[in-house]
Length: 118
Image (tube, rainbow, N blue to C red):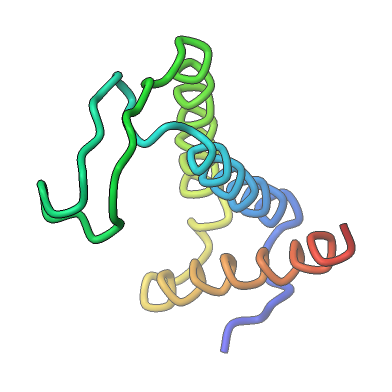
């Protein structure tokens, strides 16, 4: 087992921000039309849709596209910051993957009470 206190505070904060950024991105995408570009929908069975009829999609606005691009850029940068954190140089390679998974789980546990209380 990896010591849960082994992670520097700033690394835990980065991982928590990365979790939040992913969650915000998924939530934002869920509210957008199903197609980035305007596209006609179809009736169930025409294209083997398991969801039933698919309505026309107006596509995404330029503002929505820019927001998604900004969100992806933030996710990429946070991912880089977590992976390139100096802490990982001190972790033996034979437990590196397990340590990384522990960080993800610990950061999620830290974030969960704030989400439940909201």
